[in-house]
Image 1 (cartoon, rainbow, N blue to C red):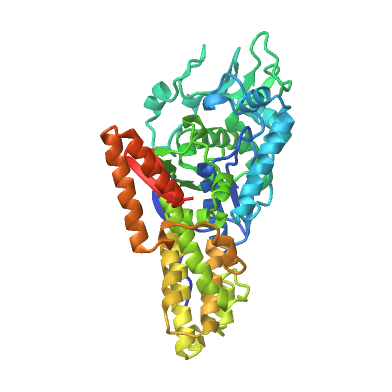
Image 2 (cartoon, rainbow, N blue to C red):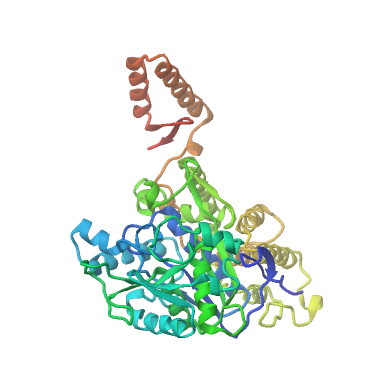
Length: 509
């Protein structure tokens, strides 16, 4: 009896591969936020995903060192190489110092992570603390002939990076011609990017450092290479981020890092990317004006674990549609889970497959494999049933973090009469070690604050649907007084109607 091989989808090659650690401790780097404003719901998905990955590695008995950067300098508006820094612009707009802006929004983000039960990273380095190392890194690239200088700064010449664009499956020549839309005077190729952004004549930046290329600030891409190598070593195993980073930011990280190292080895072996969250068929993004935050959900009566459950209900590589109806369903599902598992508490402490099997009386090694094979498995129906569910949980998380399948397995276990509460406790504890839904201590009262459509009787739903349809008809006939009357009736029932291009939707207040 052995655990399943952990397999992950590697964006570098677009293949699902066996994960084989290259060191005793896996180095894991995740691109963190630029802390110039609140992080919206879409921003939170990469960290729930990275947290699930960390939990999966721990489940397999693989130690991890996790680094998540905080960008507090160097990120220009529109991800460009020229123009204002996002933090400086926010500081001017809010009439606060850059330091105050960075500290306020970084803490808000960390609070949201804690609310979502995302385990803290080992290190949260800030870009502003590593500028000296970034300058030294850029000097090495210059000495090796990978750069050229312009009045606007120091640029990396992508024509000297043979594998440039491989991560994004880009045609190198095409990328050099169409990779960017902004015009930079003197830039040799559109894909070339700034390592150092020099101050414009007559403009003095708030955040500025002296360098061999004049006063200015580092380029956005440089920070991640420098901080990851400083904290994880020249090479490490896993780099994660949103799918949008796969096409530009991570491509440039690889180019500058492999040029810096020049050792004919891939800089990072596994690149994992989560997909977007869609709101009204568009990705949630600040630039599109969609800034719905976790705090907004909480204020509306949703529990943070309901949002985590909503995310886990879709595979991390799949786009998911965010709607209040979907959140209502997630809240109801969470409530049912908590109601079912609460009588089983307290749960044993389970973080690894080995610990779970050991609690069921199976002698195991560090990987969770039975020391004496099948002969070591206790010959009882309860134990064998529990072990079968543990195997299904392990299979799900080992298949590129298939959390929807893991959730379905947990639901099946909770409905299975085939084993005792003792065995079920181990299975629930094991599942939640990977899901992180706080099933060991979440109280039912915490998730009962919001009524949803699932709480209504069928005749109540029918009456609401009838009123909504009548209001739609009245509006179509331009009978505004009748539409307003129906709206008042719905308000009295505690129903909020939202008109969308695809028709009205409703939810309980």
